[in-house]
Amino acid sequence: MDFSLIETMRWQPEEGFLRIDQHLRRLSRSADALGFRQPQDALARLNAAVEGDQPLRVRLTMSFRGKIDVTVAPFALQSEDTVWRLRIAETRLKSDDSLYRHKTSRREPYEAARAEFKLEDADEVLLLNERGEVCEGTITNLFAEVEEGRFVTPALSSGLLPGVLRAELIRERKARSEVLRPEDLHFRKLYVGNSLRGLIRAELVEGDA
Image 1: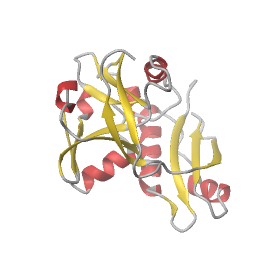
Image 2 (image 1 turned 90 degrees about the horizontal axis):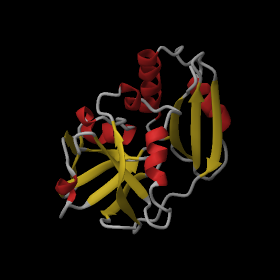
Image 3 (image 1 turned 135 degrees about the vertical axis):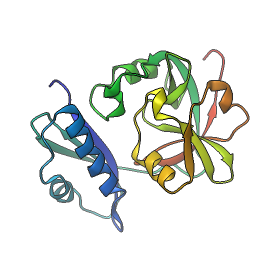
Image 4 (image 1 turned 45 degrees about the vertical axis):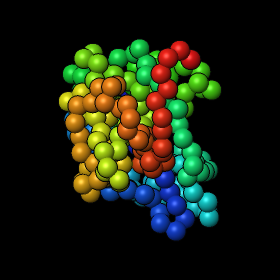
């Protein structure tokens, strides 16, 4: 196997790891689905890597044979008034490619999509599938507000990584999944998010960069 499984999470001094159970469950499910060895002592390895009084970005990678590496870096959450500019890539995801339902180091389409726009022209880039349905961003899931505090998010059938934050919002009935097309995003309040960063307000920018 020439790729690894990845989990990226946030550690808070007062709270510890956010959504740690969900991250470890996803890691285990992906290992099982892709034929990796099951992770051993992942939580102990994570706990041993963190300390201090500042939030941390913690990245766990696991090889096919179950070897775990943990890297840690300081993390500053974006301000509440942050608005990310979204653009839609020409690069497409294949809705029937099950590999991209798992978080791995195989990120070719996401890297290609991100490379279509300069950093100053887009904070995040959305990918569509071969049918023109919205899938996800290169590092986030997408959420469109349908009423105060309630969202729709692209359906798994469109082909996307089911993020930990996305799963939590669906479980708490704050979000539901459905097939979305770019035109469904117009006139709706948009957000992108992941477990590391939480929800970030966003706006779709159309036309040439």
